[in-house]
Length: 191
Image (cartoon, rainbow, N blue to C red):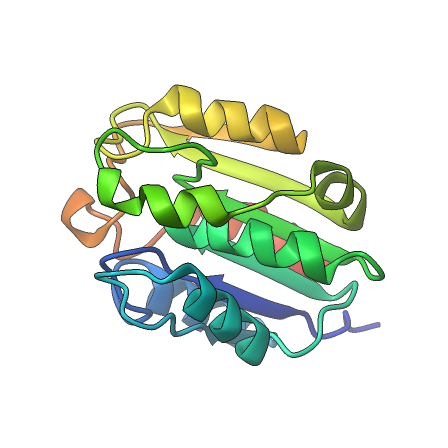
């Protein structure tokens, strides 16, 4: 019996676009395996506006259900967690994979403080309504220190995976492909 088609939404972070880094590669892997992939477009990623990003998430993720999976990078993770805290009061999703994620202010990016302050995370909802939760982090991330990612992982009661020397998981760190995310995602698509 073929598995039901899953819907995977890929959310980029600040200072980047949906066609950069490992997002196109991952999108292709998902589509080649017979599932739906959408790389979201968040406006003005060089100067992220919290409300505009929330509106963009609402418009591009019209309906979440038990076949939905969210994969988010960096600031896109925080925006997604706020969005899901609101959207999942009545429904469950299959999975959440966060890369270089955080919930507190970043010393390396003080200009993001106003954005970060607006994010409100509902941990009971996020834990209860997301079947599988993963946080991937790098020991040498220049933007998100590993303890911040680990703290968020504990907060979400997520499975955590350290990727050695991956920087901030961007093209310049060698990430045009991201096999670790694909290995986590594959069983979710198959089940």
